[in-house]
Length: 226
Image 1 (cartoon, rainbow, N blue to C red):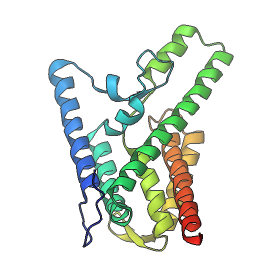
Image 2 (image 1 turned 90 degrees about the vertical axis):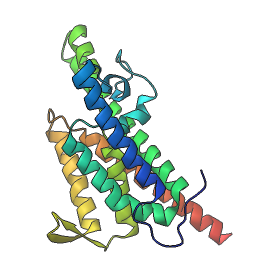
Image 3 (image 1 turned 120 degrees about the vertical axis):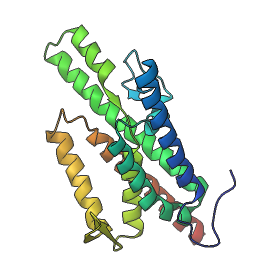
């Protein structure tokens, strides 16, 4: 793919545009196949725990394109566009695409580490192997939220004092919004089990985004120093 660096600022650069299109198409396809043919794409494309009978290595990528509801899809795609198009314009398409998948895979890895701990905890508490296997086969992660949280963190690191309007009404500096969402995900993940939201995937996305951006910054300083 030829790197995209627009002569003028684009509100819909190619990677963001194509990610939006793919997510929308797969959401519609998932609904059609489930409602009309009884086929659940989440079974194949959602991210399962590696010891689950449903697990496939490719799910670390494909789960980013699965969404459980219209509102889940709408929130993630709006945030992807809102913060992603600025980053793609600044970085170029190749770097932004790599960032999206690197952070998304990292988010999935962190979530599965948490699932591994939960599985171990269940075995220590004496749960039957059947119950543990049932949990593993139902513990599925879907959605682009991990990548979106990483994009939000990157945006906050690059433009910390830029203001966004929460609910289109309340101006908040991005650095405060990132801090609030990060703390919310942390406390929800620690104390909010059973909500059906992969809070640690959100934190994992932020963690891997921070690591990658700090690496890029170090490489930039080193190249410019020498």
